[in-house]
Image 1: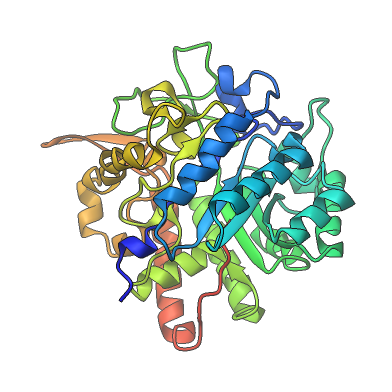
Image 2: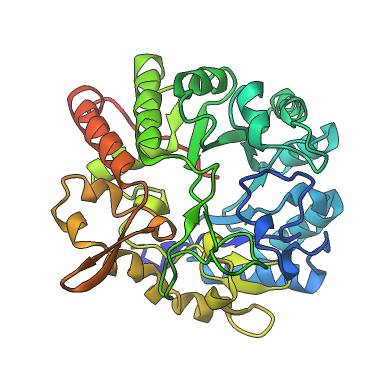
Length: 399
């Protein structure tokens, strides 16, 4: 019999070149943090790389699929030789193990050589694209301020040419939120697996040396102003409802939308596969290029640094992340306890709990996107129960 330890799984992202990127997307929450991780395109050393690969393999159960999730910044700036060394180390330490490599890219640096490498090593690629050109280019610009749509599409065409498995990742922001049908119709022309990520970023009020504020969490935070590119809650709800309508009209069983798959998972009492809509988090650490381990990709701030993999055990450090993960459930506002879609939403990501109100038990923080979540989950739960649940089977591929 296979024990739960044999299937133990973690999701450890790695930033092998830190926040370094060839683009300057206006809503980027990572490059804007500044500091050492964003200072120049220095590459992860071979020592850190080997420790990362060895320890990630070690902490997984014997029969678990081991995912190496390469993020940035723009990870293709590392160059192919870096990833060839990574593949050799995976073979050295993971012989006989089931290993998956995923990589998130803006697509603008992809070449035939890159795509052949991805195909040879069965990488699963996530490519960031915000819709057709007039929407994509609003926020996704390069250092000169030029739009990047044509370069991203060239990279996407190369992935298709070489038969590389890929997902699309689309931010839902202030510009494209009212164009859901147009965005979906554009993406479905080449993408079978879609992710839609709401942009909710806040600005510090008094700390001028930082461009983004410390998000809500286990440490205190001050009220803050939302960045102008953030999506409005109701607009996000309407966007997702329209995406569901477009998908259900012609693409059930053929196209897979992550947030819809997560809702189906929660409705059928299976793992949602999306940390935002699971009851607890804390199993998704992030390793920076110098080996520093942080509690979450959205919490790469000094307050949320756990340690360094050159100085400590990744397994032991991740065990200390339970308090952070349980905070998500423990800090649910009282209104969530009486909400009819709480079992689908679970309060969303703690970083978005920006709406504060005072109760008899002290201050509570509600998710900024709550009105949109209620709109979408009430809409989709009724539709899925009556139309799709008997025939739909989840096949979504994560990146």
